[in-house]
Length: 138
Image (tube, rainbow, N blue to C red; front, side, top):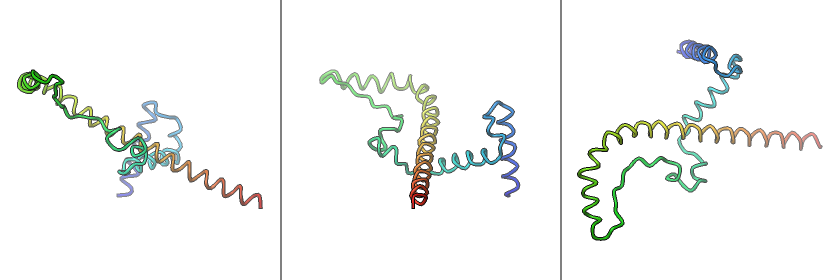
């Protein structure tokens, strides 16, 4: 199984290089490091950044459709017309865009996970550097 994974990894790296991907991927160690970071980011489910942004709802794409009206008397009639006439006519557009919204949500999650993983690595490297500098001063 490990051999198959290695072969898939080599083929993916070769394809990326052939299609004009980053020239740094020519180094298998760099490619493996980037792939490990991205895999770790994909597996990360709970993120700090969205919590700092003011909670989960702030960064998630809203895909639900809420039909309302600000008019007190005619509002119910307007909402009824929207639901019975306009909504069925626009259903195809909603179905078409919903999958795009899901893909965008997945990409957003991946990018936020990568930023967080890089921030963790940066913090660990800074702490290690601080410890080494403290040891050198003694």
